[in-house]
Image (cartoon, rainbow, N blue to C red; front, side):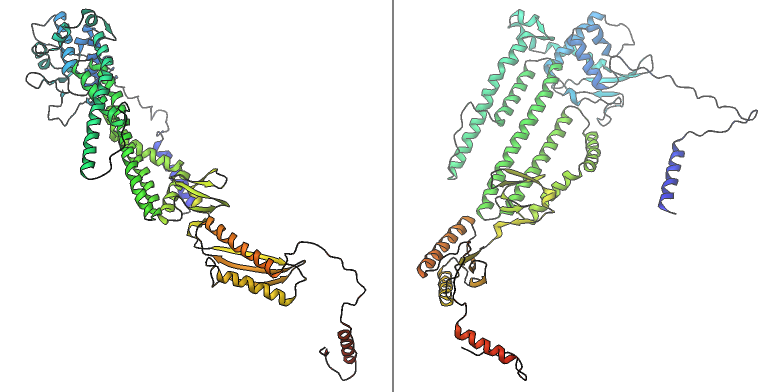
Length: 566
């Protein structure tokens, strides 16, 4: 079957598979089918208790805003008697919030957002453990239970066995004693549902955390200096104390985060603080790793350059960039995981996005693979002088997308690696000698013997010059030009660098000029000479002999023309 018909048949079958079947109606025989009854849709919970994460976050938000009637709706409903009053339940909600703010050791972002919860924690399907709170017994787990409400919805609630331990746990806290030593105004007044004294403590501890982080990094630096001294290595360059690097910032951030947990700041604000902190730590971690990789590749590059392994140095540079991209993707996935996103879904999205990107960015991948082929084929290397597309310059960098060429006009030329892989590249670094080809034009008033003498003297200069290759050097009388006798000089100068070649060629030309002056030869200039004379151009004796030979050639029985010698 032809391909066009097969494709049409395939499209027709596909359209049938997604179409709704229709049947002809015969009056009195068939009747339209009755529509299927629709199941009523269960309304969603306005309090967000469909999953464990929504239950905990909703309770913390309501309790922090001191909306205790709303907060107690996240508690497991009581079925028996006697039931506590709303005031008692509100007090339990306030105490539970205080306990969570001060002693909660888990991360809210790691709480399951699945309506079924985590099924691999060893608990019953309708029970969830969302973290632990350190106390006297070193363990105060917060349990959630999943129950069905009056409307048939499966919702999550804070279990009663957790709420029963709240008053006892609250009595063991030392946090109220700390607030008694603080001015009452800073405790009572709140900003964004958090006491003033906690805001002041968080802000004032920032320079302390920076100072502590800098002290730790300086101690580490001193240990490194002592280690280098014991091994006989030169000491590192001294650094200013107030110069904060990535390691100092990371340590200061961790110390500050520990302090925020210690003072019992609001768990809800710690959630956002932790997210910002996670992004900051990820950026600092990426900064540190990139500095380490660049330092290592720089040392490896210097070592390879000293041994003349320029291609390997370019490969190391390319590997460094690939490692940096890989580290960035890895850190980004860690951040997404820390923020509570499903990394497996992100990876699947990355795979689909990579496929779409590959289809839409063919040129980009062509340039990337072109750069890899350039590096591994060792066509050019960083520092080489090359001629590409009639552009001559020094290769400054071989990237994943393009190659940078510094031209003789000091402009920066970016050539896509896909073009580099398909054009003719002339690498001047592999040139072992330079061709020197020159034509000297002498005046026509030189005699043959005089011309032979000049050519011989120039040959002697080439033979005595140590920079000229003897096997290929030649000096020859080339042609009778329009206004001069042309002598060609053809030789190779044994120099690899262009500047050294120019110096050797200059010395050679100066010696040739001295020889021309010594032999009396004069360089011909483009000119025209008019000669007015009444003398015959030929010698009379030669002219007479030629006339006799021509007359004899016309005589019968004489073949050919013979010109007698003078």
